[in-house]
Length: 183
Image (cartoon, rainbow, N blue to C red):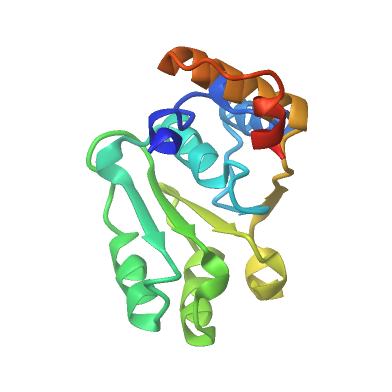
């Protein structure tokens, strides 16, 4: 459960994604937030963590943050629920954010239903689609999103993070153990 305990909750805690963090911070600072983002990259690169941090930065509270795992909720009815819900205004702050994780798992019909919402989204909604397999996301969806490609963090950054967590947990690592874990 260490991955939950040490999951990044603010920009400064995100490792290995500096270019993406800077792009998203600039979008917030310049008030030029896109209506849809597509975060792609291998598992464990921080896509969902960055999505949550970005949601907070754009003015979304936990009450107006909706997360859906498309691996389990992949049908057209699941997307229809989102299409109906986006029309309602946020409860607290100016934005509602929908994070759809593993978006490549949606059915063709579900993608078609999502497309209409991405083409004409309400101004108070931001979509963040996350995928490990961007090649399975239809071009019609990709073309309506600002795409950010997450890279694996450098081994030196992973090693440093492992050593910091071990220290916080009161563990002493033998020499070279952090190197082995980082691989």
